[in-house]
Length: 106
Image 1 (cartoon, rainbow, N blue to C red):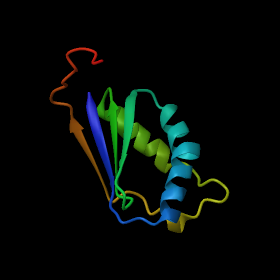
Image 2: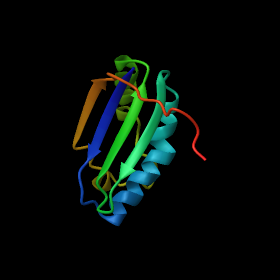
Image 3: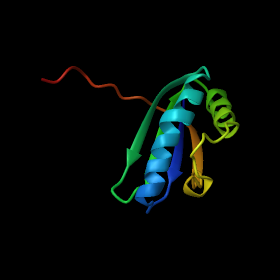
Image 4: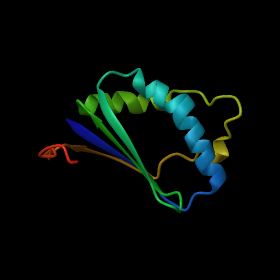
């Protein structure tokens, strides 16, 4: 199992966040879903718009294939490239250990 951390440093404007959310929903997530091997993705966002996207995949190759697929997409009508500068950095790590909850909480 591998994890990818994709960082978008803040601050980001409301317009940049709206553009990023639109791209994620309508272009990036559907493209990523079509690539086998991704297990889950979490999007973490601070009040200033800084964001870390954590993706867990079966293999490092699945993460690389997903990156290539996303970078190969064309912007959708109405998407402004000036509002979508891309991530500040991307890091891939092998998952060293997983801690599961010990049971359901009530």
